[in-house]
Length: 114
Image 1 (cartoon, rainbow, N blue to C red):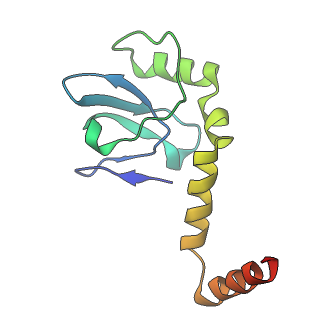
Image 2: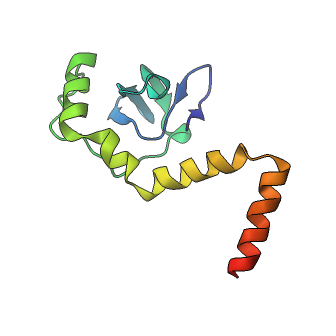
């Protein structure tokens, strides 16, 4: 459920973005799941995808504590988990982890359904 960006930073697609310099955004993701936490860093807009999940009334340049409080108040993780985008990403991750025989079984089941 991660997307690798230029450099060694890893960011999930469901993170709050704050506009910074030209074509740059500040990414910060205080998730409750340890594997989904994204440390604050700057990244080019060419390497991110914006989602319709919005944290309202977040002041410009807010610190980690303010971002975390607004994140939890808005319920970003719950909104994200219920979105079609997250479900499709979860499905693709599961499919990538299938063995050859499991892929064969899925193919046979899809043929039966029709």
